[in-house]
Image 1 (spheres, rainbow, N blue to C red):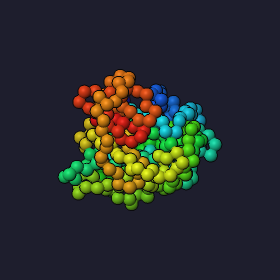
Image 2: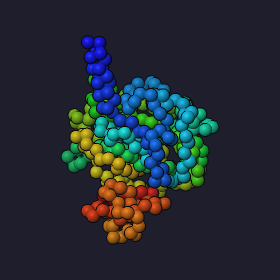
Image 3: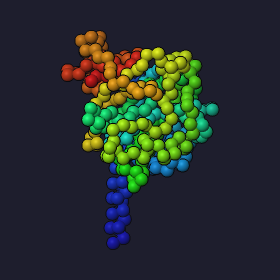
Image 4: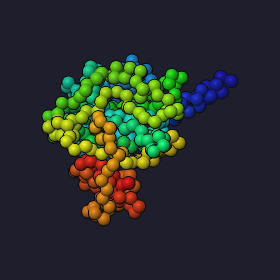
Length: 322
């Protein structure tokens, strides 16, 4: 009986672990690196953090130290990706934060009022008010061109709000990569917040019931840094459009190894985008699959989309086959 009980408990724990996901792989310069090479390893498998007062909200449980984790050098304005073990399937927003280390990234615990946000991906709403969430396995963005050089923690966070609050507590799925930024600008990132403390639990984006009268949404946390796109750090003069990437709905089925690009505007973002057909793109590289990157400043990969999709310009740094 004792051995059976232990076996049953093991099954429960295994089921619990498999019911979640973790951002375990980092991609830069077209190379997807091994698990945790540049990402601080956590000690809670792929389980979420739910305590708003815990220091684990910075870089996950076990991620308070970066000792033993490598630091990767990245170019300001270049793209990077985070990839999960299994595709994200809990409805909720995704955000990316950064914090400048006083010395080296591996020696920084992320304490203090040092964190700023560079990306929010919330839901889109159709004409009837129905929400669609961008649930993927790989999320791609760019290092802000205006970011000053130095070592940073690069933190990705997906907030699962699929269990209505307060009966269900929102779940933070997060991880930190360690980077050194070169070729940066002279911007002043902000607003700066502390983690924990950046969300107090009263924000509508934290307490919302997404199944009842859900027709608008604001991602909780600070505003996205508005000056990140300009090398000098000023706010862009031309609005950047949000890509019209189809997103997985609450059926929880998400595409695998698909990238998404979103903007850094703090004001409402237009859903319009400029399209160019694949015949207008120079025929370089392999044919790009639907939803893959097909262009952007510094892009050296394929520019011709698979039949049935076109290369859609999202902003200066990113175009996608849609």
